[in-house]
Amino acid sequence: MTETTQPWLQDARPGDLVTTSRHQVGDHARLGEILEVIGGAGHEHLRVRWEDERETIFFPGSDAALRHVEHRH
Image (cartoon, rainbow, N blue to C red; front, top):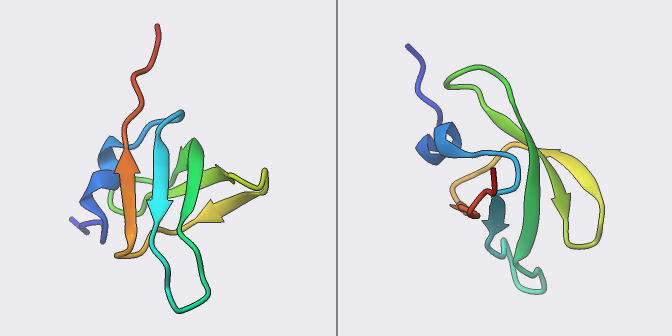
């Protein structure tokens, strides 16, 4: 079994938020809403809508963190 580099990805759900830290001077932290979790167990990545309304496929690195949002049913 291959383990994901970010174990929290297994708990990510659409509607949750992902944040990233700054990589270098002049960068800013980013916040985005997870729209979709893509890939199989251990190979997850995300479709994210960022604060600037751009959507990207995001492969989280060690600077990324998940913030769960209470989901309404």
